[in-house]
Length: 482
Ligand code: UDX
Image (cartoon, rainbow, N blue to C red; front, side, top):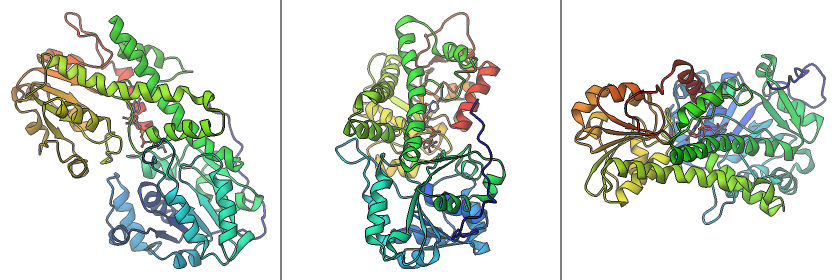
């Protein structure tokens, strides 16, 4: 159980704090678009800024450039209420905002594990040049430790208002697919601040969330930066831990699904993020653990987090192992064999294909000579654009028709609910690899499929259910919590 944090006292008077601040959000990608919409939903006057005019036009028109359940409706609601406007003009944003949230991306650098801070630096510099009065800049992007300290100096040297400008760090923990609820009902708020004023000004941006009892942890700047990467590292480690156990299971004939189930009942361990399978991907976990390891090495404490290199390696090996399992089911050679690749997004309820394990597997199979047929309910446009060499199907049915092996790579509800008997009528061979431990193994076996999953023995005779109700619930929790 987390420790109870006493509720933050919002009644303490702080001179110079704007109670109902005007807000700007710089960067309108996944994080920024969600944050801007949610702040407007909370009743603040918000200006969203991006340097990408096409994206700004699209958002101002009420269209989200990303797939996020429920967000587009909320966007249209706050546009109609006049609480949210969009611009590309830093001067306008600087004039509007009492608090400026920095939500630009920090991708992995090309040719290095380090985070690329080009966008953060550019956004903060462009904003600072226009700041002529006291205000608070709040970083939300995931950054290497000590970035906030460096940016504080940068801002004060650049802004006409100089020392009047303060900087805080307020990491964001939202999961794709649950972005709105994670923003409006977060597990906790972390305020990395350098003064009581900054703390109170930041609290004024979250009044109703704090009043709802959300714990607020107030820290120094470096700790706030660290909380985010530490949280993502922990989650990645938990996933790779169970996937490492899957490797051991594969060598011993043990069953990782039962192992995970047994572990999940230990309340100290819990079932969340203990779902074995193809492993983690996306725009956060993989690049965050690499950037963290890289930064720790630069700080001389690389050894302390060297296990993150193993976490990454275990995760990558799952992709090759999935290819191996598909190849095994195809009779040892995939050349010319049609493989139905179900899923492209890095996880369900998302069209995000950044570091998507599914597309890595599809690419490896394609390179091995297979005729892959990729289908995803939401990520097809992104996948086609980035992986034009792969073949795509227009439906689940089209993907599996005539397939030598079916590979479930992203656990969309549509795939989980598919009728095994119906799929068997369409497919060329009764072979399925459940890369996400998401299907009802019993139902597939009963329908006549050769059902295989990473870390589970190929079974004949007595069937051990992978869909025990309790554990199915634990897996659902894992999904819901991310
Ligand atoms: C993550 C963090 O959860 C979030 O707090 C942070 O702000 C951003 O990074 P997200 O990238 O949206 O969020 O995905 P998440 O739901 O955490 O899943 C990450 C990956 O792990 C997915 O590829 C998912 O399929 C995989 N996963 C998750 C597992 O393989 N097993 C699990 O048990 C859980």
